[in-house]
Image (cartoon, rainbow, N blue to C red; front, side, top):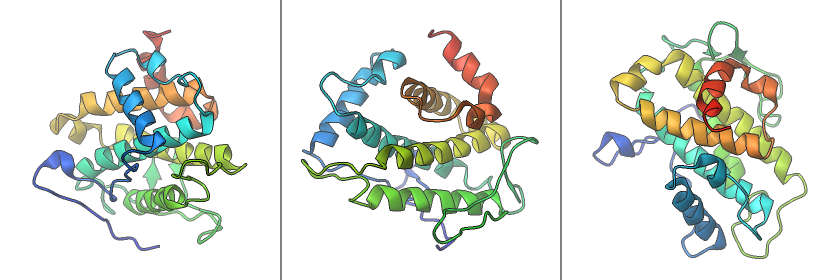
Length: 221
């Protein structure tokens, strides 16, 4: 896996992503589901917005939202890559108590200690490979999801959470300077409501941001 960063810049800061955006094909059922998700998000009620739409397949709903969260985190991290360097972040951490070592079970079997930018590059490349795998994330109508889909989706979401945790703990000042705070909070709140709705991330994994999670979700109980 290369360690270089793919950055798409088309003039404005908000269009900068860390990895290329993952597109859901227009006209597909998954695209319709994504549009439904966007429309319900616009209502402002996140608890309602994350619920499985009536008559829809849970795997497909989780798949569409996982792609969406990948794109959101991709963009959010893309805005602060200048601040997340080998020098500023020699280890991948979320505050002083939590440090992450990378292993993907295939190319890197034994967890390795690496810098945050390196870890996030490994992580986002790995997620991209899963999303691009048609046997895991089928985009064609009628192609079934594999039996292990939900466990793969849980691993993806668990790892994406770590990018949020790193941004909040190590790079919140630049987020405020860039006026991305509301964007980050809304994205993370949506993410948390989604994983809580379907019990997709173990509570222990969420510990680095537990206080923030309680603060963001307490008003909506």
